[in-house]
Each structure stands twice: as C-alpha cells, then as structure tokens.
Length: 282
Image 1 (tube, one colour):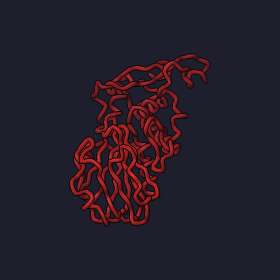
Image 2: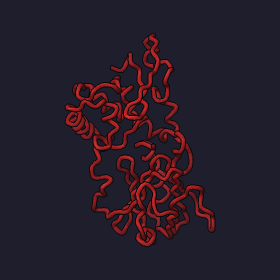
Image 3: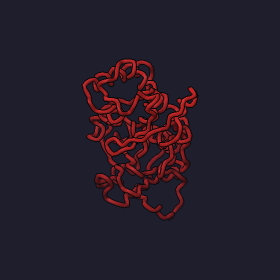
Image 4: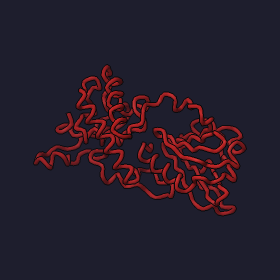
C-alpha cells in the first residue's frame, strides 16, 4: 500500500497538472470500490473548478470551488494517472473513474484490487474516514516538539510493540511498513520494543528519524513496489536507498562500518514483515 511519501508525490503531480482547471466530464465505471462511490458524483462535480490539492495521511483531497472536496484513497493497488485527453479513447483496464478537464487533461483512477476509496464531502466538514487520524509527522521544529509530546502521551502505557504502534493511523498519520522499518533502523530502536519502555530521548530519535526518512523518500519520488507510480506514470526510486526493508539475510550496513558482521532479520508482527538488525537496534 502506498505510504505518505508516495501519496505526497502523487498529490504534487496532480497539483502540477490540474490546479485551476475546470471539470468538463466525470465517468464512474463502477458503483463501488472498498466503499460505494457517491451516487450522482458526476452531476455534483461537473463544471466545478479544482482550486487546491492537499494530503491527509494516505488520503488525497481535491478541493473544488463549490465548497466540496473529493477524497481519494489508493488502497493496495490504486493509481492516479494524468495525461492529455484523446477523444473517444477507450478506458484503461481496471479504470474505475475518469475525470476530463476543459483544458484537455484526463485523470484516471485505476485499481485492479478495487480496495481504494472515492468519496465526496463538504469542505468545511471532517469526513468519518479522517476524523480519528493522528497528527501528520512532518513539520517545523515546533511541530516536531508537538509530535514528540504526542507520542510520549500515547506510547507511555502501551505494551504494543513500537513498530505496530507507529503503523497505527490513529497514533500518527501516513506511516506504514516500509518507512517505519527504515525509521526505526535509523533511530537504532528495535521494532520489537514495547512502546512503554521508550524514554524521552529514544522517542525524539524516532521522531527525527521518521522526518528524515520521509523527507528523503519524498525527494526520491517514493518507493515503487508492484503498482505504485507517479501521476505521470513514472516510478519512484527510494527503494534503492532502503537499509533494512526487504534485506533479510544481507549484512547490516551500520555494522559493517564498525567492522562487525550482523545480518538483517525478518519477523512477522500483526501479519506484516518487520526487518531489523538485532545488533544495532535495541
């Protein structure tokens, strides 16, 4: 599933191509994905102007000039591709939603597994899907302090492992398996540690590591695995910078710089693989 860097990259691509454009036509090629697509979505947003794009966790929000917002979640395999509209061009395989602008652009939502979401809500309201999400992990130094205090508060009594806690969208938004593994490696914290055992300094290390990893991943255009591509169809490249994710059996790069030999291990936590070095992550 795409995580924060991938969604941020897609959001920026959509913004570069579609901002201030007017929606000429909308077609929904099915009634439901993970949730039902709103009835009359085409009628409600046709002829409106796209005025801004934002991201909340792993959701893309498309603001319209009629005080409504389109909400999109890509699920496990969703893509959003923008390209010039060609008259009478057939829809792509697994294309479930097509938006064409007056300016000649075509936005296609493609999702083989159909586990994504397309919804519409009043812009001044907070939809249920976003109402209980934790704070965004990226921000300035003031926000950094806020995230640290927020995590201290929510982790201090948790027996749950730190890997599982950081993947919980109610605790912090946008993180998933890849970037939690990479951030914990950078912070030197084992994914197996009980959350309640972390002290203030360790939590700050985790916060700094999360922000570093996410920033680097966004700069690299995210990580392309299986289905993820940018809004223009190109792949991201952060996967070449992974230090632990998917590296089971490889030597730990941290340990090699210290002339030690330790291999990356894999363990399954709540059904997801965690990768770590048990020598430098404690």
